[in-house]
Image 1: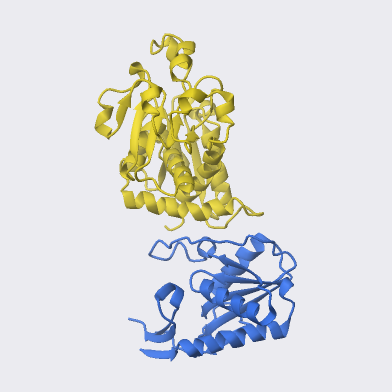
Image 2: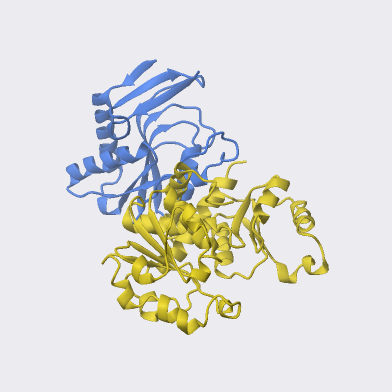
Length: 298
Length: 176
């Protein structure tokens, strides 16, 4: 459901399990028979290419059967309720739902009502646990630890489930988390999650080990959160100068898709400090680990 | 509880296994030793080391974990820990010798063979075990055996190794 409910030990266990699955992705035959005969349904009520593909690949590498359901071409357009739609699919004896939904708490609703495992692939702005777990795995792979690391998350924090899940996960593992963005895009009272708030990257980036950039949506300009995208770029884009304020061995991360030239200049996105592509492949391994832990045993 | 093998007996058995492996086919270039997690791993490393001492060349040595290939994942109560698999060299056309501590039902070895086949197509797969305790449930046999120990199903054979348990010994215990 979310990282908020996980203990530090559970997170460490999941990270450890992910290592074995990461190895499978380097083999000539990238498949293991573990979930043979199980059926996983990807229920995506929001547009998503990368997360859905990542889950689909993870499911297939575990030899599970995959069903993809996208809201647009569905009976929901005919007025069927969510629970009815889901119970109908469940009646066909599937084993797991991977759910992405714009309304927070929807996975929790399904988890209460259904007897099978539900994986939250993003519920509104609430949580995106598999993304955060895989980001933490990427950090741990490079830095060998999480405790004591300084992490700056920069961007539209208010609308970001990735930020929230990462804040939960990183704090539980002892990292020092800073959030940074325009005041209009930083939720009030976020300090209560244990983070330090900054309104300028120059302040947030001092001596950090990790920078996580979040995607800024152009719509925010029309919704009154920003005067203009160009002003956002002026103040918040991760330029070389700003990056230099961080530690020499800083890692640049982004959950994707990257708006080149907006939150990240192209040269930084493709540069040596960027681990964005690692995040992508580790995402598949992490999702395999989560599917294995939830589904392999009855 | 009875001690079936002590440190010296284990060392002699492994030495004999290493000799037998080479006696059957002396070509080290063609040989791959793969240890099955968990205790097959240090045993494989020891055998590889012994072969290196005898022939001056160490065979490629890998490790594999069978957890994801088990046939009983839905039945067991506990959540098994998935350990590392590392076979960072090609195994096509090689002679692979799998190494494990105890051969019992044969299901672990069946799973290990499936893991190997997903990595390539060995010319030959052979099995070396420290202890064969009988009670096969599949048509699987070992090519090289350290010690044959007939057991009843109420008994358990436990191998302890320096690298994992801090000491070398083979114990026979009653299941409780």
